[in-house]
Length: 173
Image (cartoon, rainbow, N blue to C red; front, side, top):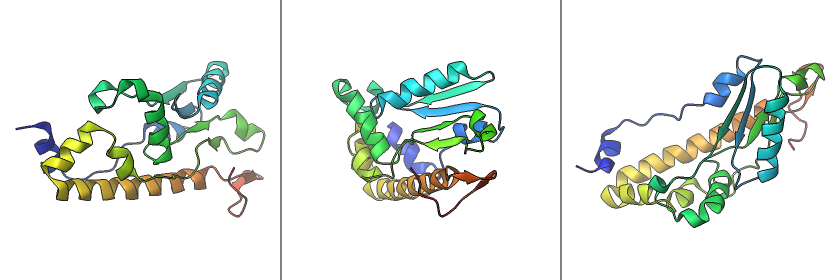
């Protein structure tokens, strides 16, 4: 049996969020980057992580030949991952809290394309769509809902702060 049959039989579960877990410690510099989506943000995250006097964690999106993409278009594929909300760009710097600023800075915009359209660019998802289109549709709908919810949760956490508290009506940059 092919690998798609394993996915077909697996229950739906949410992606784990290592960055969020690390942020909850409160004293860890955390960044999520994708060089192809925003090289300036990536370089800034590395510089901030290096200068932070404490533990730092950088989680980087890395395209892979196993994804079944044309490796010559890897950087634009990273942009598509961010545009779909499959991957979120952010930096969490505990030093900002001392300045009464929210430590979390959301560096990616709200998703502008669907997770389904992103998934269609990868052969690994195409194989599942071909093998079991009903299950693939179910999984992709779940992935879309999770990406939408995850972005909203990060946007809420990144709201500007006044006197150490988030200001819900302030614009998100």
